[in-house]
Image 1 (tube, rainbow, N blue to C red):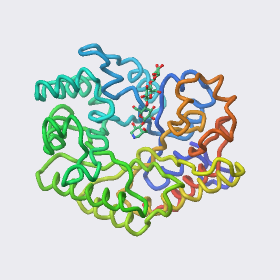
Image 2: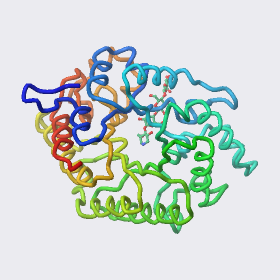
Image 3: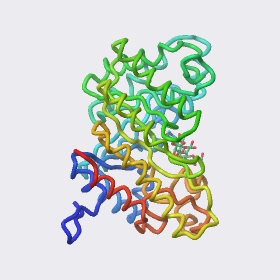
Length: 351
Ligand code: G3I
């Protein structure tokens, strides 16, 4: 694993391992297979991978009963070959329910399609993948008294759908660690205050009901346009979640920039400083066990949407100025100050 002449870990993986933690990234096997520089960086810097898209319901079962397993199988082959682990992202997410399944769920009010989805995916991957986002993004304060998001799941099965999904997953993958994954929890904003409150109450209700919830995924999509991270409130929130016996993972770290007209060096400095502020609070909580970025390079990021669709060739042509620079490496795979911010925060973290 990468160490400097100073003996200090130089790779994110080594810096994380220094305190028994782990580091990783979201990934698409097609990009890893087609880009040797990206592949090399992932092998050097990561011990965990999250399928960015391939394991989602609409990607893995676009038509009823016809499954596209290859992208996930190939990602697992790659991770196995490099001693990495894979996160199961995600079983139930309102944004990736195939339209055919949404129709059946609404018409039949029958849990069957969800049971079949879980059974198929967990039968195939329940052993190889031991950390699952069973529910992704259940909250949208303002619609429902308890802050739950309006979705086909809530509409058809009521608030109890979350406990039911967790229990279903526990039966089908008894050794897997089951999680709920959420965003918008760190800034000093009314909406994010309400999200922290609603998520804590949700976890308390689930634990009180004996639901098999083992961990919490905090996405960590930072945004320089959102003002100040509320370090005290966020730190307290993490401590309250830890006190309920859950482990925590930062699952989708990246930074949305506000000003792309500023000099690139200034932009990268702002991004790195925000990441350091954030991780110094998060990693001060021993229950926070891992940091996963939502991509390694600005070459591929949902924050520069078109990169996903236009092949690699055009990517490089895209100007440095246009891209969002919210990931550890730039489009040419050069390390950025954000990489150092993550590494230094990991090295400074308590065990
Ligand atoms: O792979 C197909 C490609 O074959 C096809 O040509 C192309 C055109 O339609 O679509 C490609 O699939 C896209 C896929 O990303 C791969 O790039 C899907 O349309 C697109 O919907 C999918 O978007 C993903 C999105 O979640 C929805 O699943 C993004 O990559 C991914 O970054 C984003 O990630 C989410 C997390 O899961 C949850 N938290 C927020 C985060 C950002 O939205």
